[in-house]
Length: 579
Figure 1 (cartoon, rainbow, N blue to C red):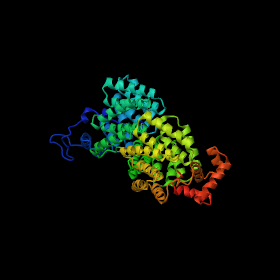
Figure 2 (cartoon, helix red, strand yellow):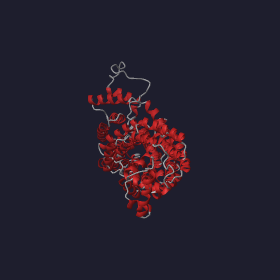
Figure 3 (spheres, helix red, strand yellow):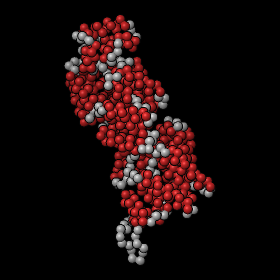
Figure 4 (tube, one colour):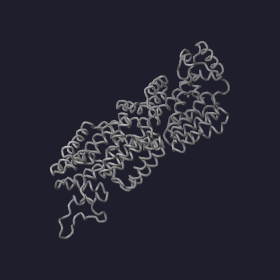
């Protein structure tokens, strides 16, 4: 949930007189004979009833300038402000509505204004101001001893805070209290927000199927128009966040398509902001829309930096990932640095960046530390792919094997296609590293099928490169060439210039990786030479004597007709031995 609740429902603040017929449009200048002249406020209310949010904002603002609006119309204007993306202005208007409701001795609606003000500020990172307004809402209902749904709403931020602190049982308890009050007092918006929180808490408790089912039920209500427009975006963002937690790309894409159609019917809405943009950027990246993904990440960086919000680090990390994959290593490094400054770990992305820069030891040290510090399964699973890739590059096969085993176990527990694809991909890479080309092909074909089903072109192309290397090792030059053709085309379409260069380098290699000249142990030594390790370091890594390493290096030079370690490194890269 978190910052996804920035746009919220104010409809309960509005008196019944705002629900005007939708069939008629009030003329802008004329008025029915014998009645008062039609005002901007009248036109604003009518536009609001038609869901013409920009028009409602313009007319109500004009009406407020001509003559201060009453608190019900101020509440409408505040909601219109938020729906068209004028949050700061909406805060000011809602604050005025709160004051005016109090002056008119309407504590119920005053308390609602105070709650929504506090809740938006709380979830947008301004905790001190937010808590102040929430306390004000609580004081208003306590002093008047109101049996108000606001008592239930006040449990919502408590539940969010419990989730953020790693206390899902406490969160579930708070959201359940909110739901019970919402049911008793007949407040549908409260019931919806509470059930959403319950779904998120259940997922954190490991009751994934229950939690997801609850969120699906809520999204059906949202797309069917059973909740207010201001609640739809927060609900969708929460579902995206939940799908991110359980690696459910298919569900995220399904709800994205449904919401895209819903928003198309209301073009005035500003649907996606902040943390929601981060998750959309991730989804766009996976599906190969990298330019759109970078735009979404850049927008998220802007929104979440002013004022700084907890999700800001995620936004900069996502922007860094796309830049890294496109070969903008300096831009990526700067974005990873900002993510770290905003308390988001820069790994595995930064470690993979160092690997791309040839800083193998730095990459290995960083990813080992990051994985060692990660405790939760969902955090470790996001690191393991990068960890395995770097360990294979370092020829630390034992560490890579342990990483593959853990990833396979997590995939079995969560049962998410995304994790199954990752597990099959890196298991295949490990088998290739130990010269089990046939086993590698089996794993990588499995990975390729799942990535295609998930609509993940970049990962599919990476698997095809691995598949081509395995086919070359088995002497299937035609099969390898076809897979390289497909991979290169995909990389070029995405703008993944480092991967395009990698495919071209592999194509220039005239022989299969081993060429039947090196023993398995000599290949291991050559891989470590290519990482820049000394004979002593290689001996330590392989648990053999330095003298034995020197003999292997001499044999490699002789068999391959090489004269230096630099030449050996170049050979390893040309022949795809430097993983």
